[in-house]
Image 1 (cartoon, rainbow, N blue to C red):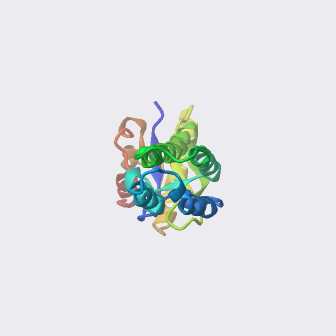
Image 2 (cartoon, helix red, strand yellow):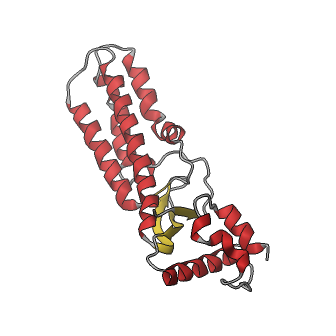
Length: 213
């Protein structure tokens, strides 16, 4: 079974991912300014307004990701278009009965969280289709700047491919630690990088194994 070792990025508390989309400000400005037209009950207005105003920061609170919030531009577009479509449909209706509108907003919010989670995780899982170091371009949800994710795929089809992949991992980690690569792949000290030991391998213990010698 192919395994995945994700390398190299530290997560910072982000404000959400959808706000990095180019149409987010325009769309949510419209949603906030028209919220008072969507419910017969005045109590729904401040509740709905708060949901919309806190959308980005609440998104990050609900993601609960153990990996950095880095999303590809393609997947961000897919998530954004799905959310905008749902929201636009909701706003096309006339005024709703009490409680309906904020409940629908919450449902769209929860669906958006799941879409973002899946988008980020799917990109990481796709790494296992590769053998060795692999990099893909992303957008950082922390500050909406271009970023990238580096990972290590174990889907190698031969011992020669595996040896090349581990050599690449050695070079990457040594560069990461700004150390010269004076090690030999064939040294028995690198048994921690052999397939039987990979199930519980992390970047930290792989790095420790490589830099102790």
